[in-house]
Length: 311
Image (cartoon, rainbow, N blue to C red; front, top):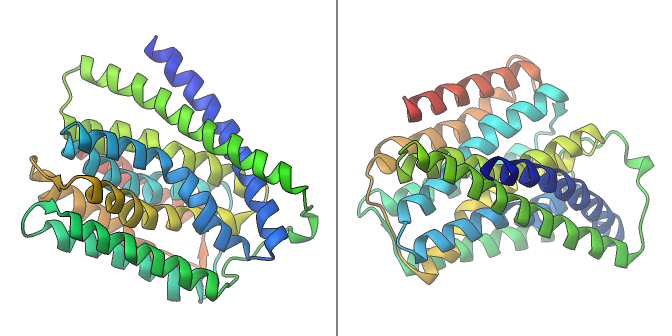
């Protein structure tokens, strides 16, 4: 039965990624907003919904390690696994303005998370408020100073759809991604528990990969359809949302306390390392491009990370 859950979950995630992409393109055309803004808001929020649901449920049930491990692991998977696969499939060209705003915000949000848990091993309610306020400030800035940071190779092929279709695709995409993630997580966790794997390992590997499948589906479909602005914006936006929205909202509802200190002494440094690594990779070996070579590096490092976790 677990294998059926996993298979159906993956199918729903593919359908959801395609529907969400259509909605994102439609709204960007209708509102005349650059696609990277849509990618970092609508698409990022929808693909981060599984992380929010899993983390909030886990924290409320007293499984804080699973909640925090899910977010840390998802951020690592978004850059190591999802971005790695995405740029292996298709090279992404990046403008300088992109790394003047979006990467620094992702890096700063990651450092803010570390600062909040480094001393007491807990994210208090007031710290959750701070994270959520930072998210609002970032979104206001993003919408106020709309920018095009990634080259869209097929913008002339875009077609504006009726409003009801945009809303329908958004709803179908969000529900399919959520439902698919739930099925995938349920099946994966059941299999993992059968082998006696710890809660922290489950959260930072299986559950985090499961909740990152929506980002993978949305990003791969996006690059295959040449909507690279949405793909790259979705990934960085999802990492920002995971910290500021997912942990912000979760810790506002209930404080998130760490019991397995390896989350603090090991795992979060992997997250910071992957976030930091993206910056130099955009300059070397080819300036302002992310290609298959960088993708291989990211995937190889992610494989090392997974090996270290399960070894």
